Image (cartoon, rainbow, N blue to C red):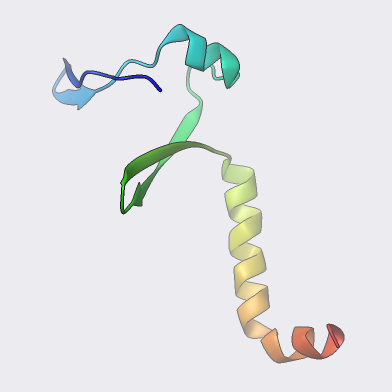
Length: 74
């Protein structure tokens, strides 16, 4: 576990990720991270816009055809 200090970056606040974490997670400049709020705090996770688009399409299809998909599942 790493302890990060919140720093002023321009007109914003941010944290600097340690190189070891960047290397271990294969992160690179301009990669996107998603902040997930949880009861214990926050979690950062990689954000893939292509996967997010696919997941949204799946959710829409799943809710629209929920009854049909349930019948296929029997």
